[in-house]
Amino acid sequence: MGEANQENCAVVVSMHGATCLECGSDFTRHKSWQKFCTGICRDRHHLRKRKNPPGRQPTASLGGNIEKIHASNYTAYEAKWKRVLAQMAQGRALDRFTSAHELQDSALNTTISYIESRGVEVSRRSVPLTGLDGCPVYGKVYWLDSGNKKRAAVLLGWQTCQGR
Image (cartoon, one colour):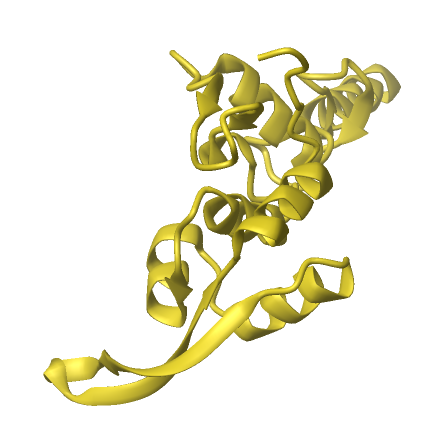
C-alpha cells in the first residue's frame, strides 16, 4: 500500500512539474497544457519560431539612413508603447479606433502620455471620427513630426547606418 501511494505522489508531481520549452528551467504548471515558465519565454519562443519574419528593412521616411524593425516583431509582452511608437515613427497617424483594432491598445491616450514621458513629443489634433453605426464622434489623432521620428527611432533602438 505504501508503494502505491508513493507512485501516486510521483504521478502528481510529474503532472504538475514541467520544463520550459524556451529556457529549460523547471516550473510548476498551473494548467495542464502550459509549456513555458513565463509569458516572456512563451513570446520569445513564438517570435523565434515564426515563419518568414519580416526582418530589418531600410526606410526612406526616416531620412534613408535608419534601419527599422517591423512593428509586428514587438510581442504583446514587450510593451504596447513600442508597437504604437514604431507605427508613428514610420509616419503613421493613429486614432483610438485604429490603435484598438490593429495594435491592441485600448487606451491610446495613456500610451501617448507614457511615450511623451520618455522624451518624444507627440503632435495631436481633435477630429471627427466615424463611430458606432456611422455616427460622428470627436477624438484625437496622434502623429510624430520628423525630428521626433528620429528621437523615436533612437528610443526604439533602431540602428543608424553610417556612410549610406
